[in-house]
Structures are given as structure tokens and as C-alpha cells.
Image (tube, helix red, strand yellow):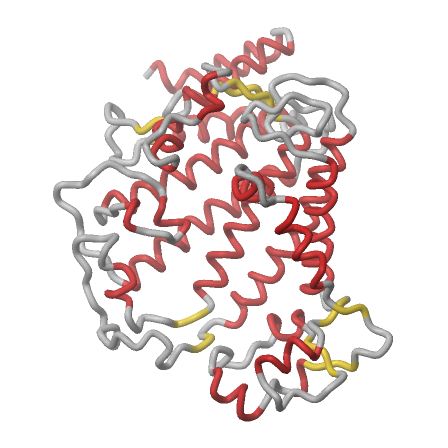
Length: 399
């Protein structure tokens, strides 16, 4: 009974408390460990104070955490062994399930669709934030997930990071025991970008019908695999087709948003004059993770994001010399418009034999003369500036 009075109590306190007290209460809600109750309570607070971006920020973060928790609960249900997978979504470490359910190609699709809906809800909440001075402090070592659906058996964020780091406690935790981070306006755009990136990966995967070889791809991750009709053939590329072209279009749209939100992220971060437990700092700030970025790295990364945006928006073309590596049937001087390809893909997009023998369909090609072309050198520069020991992690962190 008392727990249902919490939102009302917080509303009363918020109306009379100092701003720091309000932030503390929001921080407590996000860190409390029950993301379902936290989302409900924060939604009630948002209903009562629709202009308060602090509440909206806390709500969006909680919805993102629920997306991770829902994924983990599904992986636990099917007994996933995360260390046996290189697939990003299946890499999430979950406790061992002694009685796993059987997994199928269709059930994995449903799991991903639920995560997609969760991520889109979180992104929509964060997208409504307009205040430049919004701050959400969080002690990340307090965050935990109920992957087994048992409130008494939670998996901490720190333990997840430790498992992903080859069972070694990450170095950066030694200098910040509480893992305190002050998330700010730049981090709002950063988290929105990550939501769009994960949504793009899901929509891209779900746009293709590929049950063939499911067992061989997934058998080491899940102990019990259940086959639907037509799944048992092990020839992965046999019959691979674009079954939902609208989802491939949405994949492109999500990626365009990733590029735009990277620019927005660094616009806000570069304007910061403080240095207070930053999540993603500019070179003049202290990096809590011990992987500081240089201006050269940031500038090169943003250049790549602009290149991605230009390609996926159809402003630049994939040049014909690259296409001729794939097929000699492609006419010289004609570049590929990726926006047209993603928006209206052929059903047999992955039919390499047809493409090699017949060439890329003319409706996706445009004359290169007078047009902007893909810059290969930029891709090489990104590989160079992120080539150090922390390079891959820095790139993943940037999204």
C-alpha cells in the first residue's frame, strides 16, 4: 500500500523542495532497482509536471534500462550462454537458467521486436527534452537488473561490465568507486543516438527472412533449439530474401538519425565549461572512464558521421570503381544511390550471382558527374586515429 503513495509523496515534495532535493529524488527512483515501478512513478511525475525535463530525462533513462532488462529476461528464459556468442544482442551476460525454454527463429524475432518497441519509447521520451542545463546524476554501481524476474536475485551493471571485460573489473572503477556520472544535455543526444543505432540493427536484421541454418548459428548460445518448418537446412544463403522492405527503409532512417545525433551530442559537449563527473567529455574535461578523446579523434569521427549521413540521404554516391569490384556489368561513371536502395530494395538483394551476372539495377544508379562521391580516405583516417589500445572501445563508446 505504501509504495503506491510514493508518486504522490514525491509530487508534494517536488513542489516545495529545493532543486537539488528534486534531483536527488529522481536519482533515487532510477537507482532503486525496480525499473517497472520507477517508470510508473516517473510517468506520474511527468504527467503532473510536463515541462520538467529533469523528470523526462530520468524517465527516458529508466525506459532504456527496462529495454536492457527485458532483453536479459528473455535471454535468461532461453538459457543463453553469452560468452559463446559474438552477436551484440546475445552478448548480454545473464545468470545460468537450470530449466531453459526452447528457443526458435520466430521467438528470437519476437524478443527483438519487443526490444525495438522499448528503445523507441525511450528515444521518444528523450527527444522531447529541450532544456540545455538538464542534469541527471547517477551512481552507476547502484544500477541493477532483474534478469531472472526475482527481485532478490539482481545482476548489477558493474558485474555485467566485468563479465564483458573478460571477468576483470574495469580499470576505470578504481578511480571512481561509486561510478558517479553527471549525465547532461550532450548525453541526452548520445543516448538517443544509441537507441537509434540499436533500432537500426534490429530493423535491418528483421527486414530479412533467414531461418535457414538457424540451428548452426545459434546452437552454441542456447541449449535447446526448436525448429520451425523450413529451418533445418544449413545453407545460410539459400533463399535469403528481403521479406519486409519497410523495415530496411526504417533501418536507413535510424542510421541517418545516428549521424545527426552525433553532431548534436558534440555541439552540446563542446560548449560545456564545467568538469563534473562527465560521461562523454571534451578534451578539456576529465574522463571518468580513463579513455580521453582528442580533438582529432572527435573531428574525424564527426566527419565519418557526415559521410554516413550523405550516403544514406542520397547526397553522395558509392563510386563506380567500387561497384565494379562486385560486378563488371555496372556501367562506368554511374554511382549507387544507397537511399534509393534502402527505400525500395530488390527482394533478392543478397543474390550475388544475379548481381555479378546482370549488374545492379539501373534504377539505383545515377551519373557521377557533378555529384559528391563517397570518400574512402575518411574511412582509413578513422581506422588510424582509433588504432591505439583503447581505440575500439572509444569508437564503441561514441556510437
